[in-house]
Length: 154
Image 1: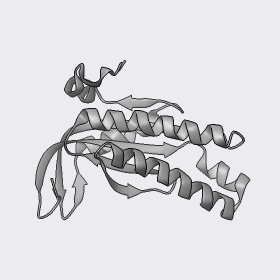
Image 2: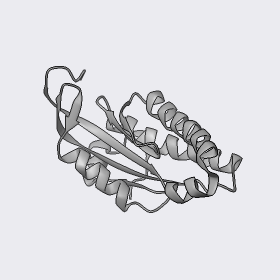
Image 3: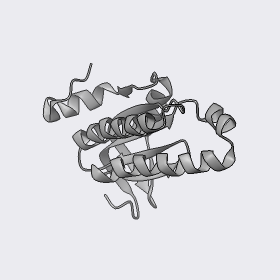
């Protein structure tokens, strides 16, 4: 859905957050943190783009994305971005980078390119509740995904 005049669609939302980003900023200082944020955001955006999602907004230490074609694509992006952040963390082991991810899906409304609705709120809450290094998915994501993609959602 292009997000023009308005309407609703069944879509998936992904929220991701860098764990301990404020502490990391204080440890690194502004310039080094800006460089890390640039690299971190690049990794996240690449994963979202690679799986057909669209970024809704950046939070600096994370982002929110929408997937309007496939729940499996949203799950694939979540796994991909975690793996990509893990690679970045291995390249910079002293930083201790880790992310939390929340996924939800359902009927949401878009008006002038801005999404709203219960699945956005749920994805944000799941991300906030996730332990570092985990992806929390709403039950509806599991149901819509079924056995597609070979994912083991517990």
